[in-house]
Image (cartoon, helix red, strand yellow):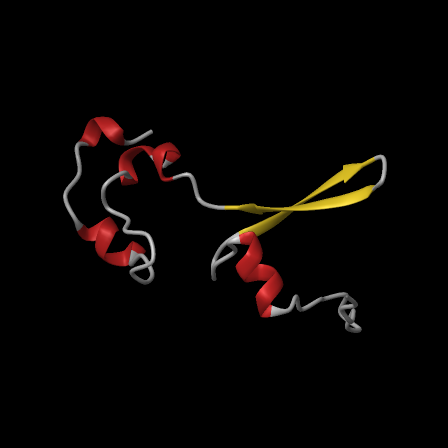
Length: 80
C-alpha cells in the first residue's frame, strides 16, 4: 500500500488502516525506530494521569471547555 507525502510532508492514511489500528480522531500515532524501519503505534490520552482533571473529562463526548473549568471554584491547595 502506498500513501502520498504532500509538499508540507503530511500523509493521509487510508481509513481501513486507521480502523485496524484502533485510531480515533484526537489520537496520536507514535513512530518507533527499529532495526528494520519504523513501527507505527496508536497513542491515546491516559486519563489516569490527568490528576485534578480526573473525572471531569469524558472520552468521545466532545471537547473540554477550559474557560468554564477555570471559572469553577477549586481548592486553593491545588495551585502552584
